[in-house]
Length: 256
Image 1 (tube, rainbow, N blue to C red):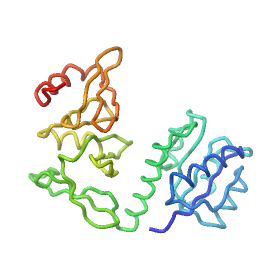
Image 2 (image 1 turned 90 degrees about the horizontal axis):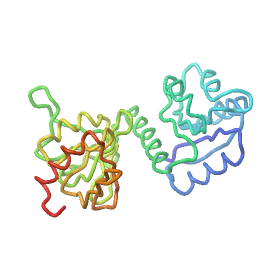
Image 3 (image 1 turned 60 degrees about the vertical axis):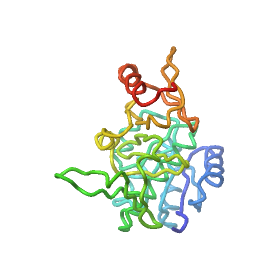
Image 4 (image 1 turned 135 degrees about the vertical axis):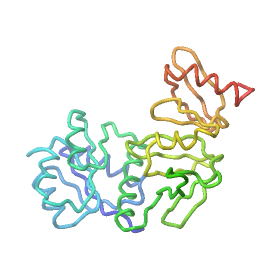
């Protein structure tokens, strides 16, 4: 896949430069082709350069990021808002933004947002990158003999369920992390995966996380309830799930 042509729109120069630096270090799949500081110059730059992705601040000198998007009858680019203002999130998603990231920028959140853009592009092109293709049994989606069939740009991969360390909800998608630190973004919700994994050693410890008990290293039950995974990941255990979680742990793990 060629690098995605990207434009950064932010009314503050340090903000533009900071994001450009992050992109150059952490997102080599992107190519920043221009930066703008207001609605008018951003509109002209987008029309002239036809980017695939626009990082967009909300408050601009001569309007808002929403004003910019409203100038396009049909948007041919994907938008990720990167802003210090949290009150516009609902309006941003109504404007079909891919994601809404608050400053200071979290690198992992930014990577996840870009992954969504890449997925949308491949879905649009018919490639269906990182989409789980599962057979149907009795009208319900099911795993295929303990494996996920994951279609990527490199072809079909069979991912063993036992290699999954945890699953994380990302809006209407799910990020699946394996024991080799490889990850996939799946176009299914965490709730769907919870149902599919109910007969395996998985437990939903938080509204945003399902973990594989076999990769659980330790549990800290103090002021905060924390599950520590073998890869070092620390995940909060919700209060209402704590008792059931400890019961499940006692069944699957004898050394905790």
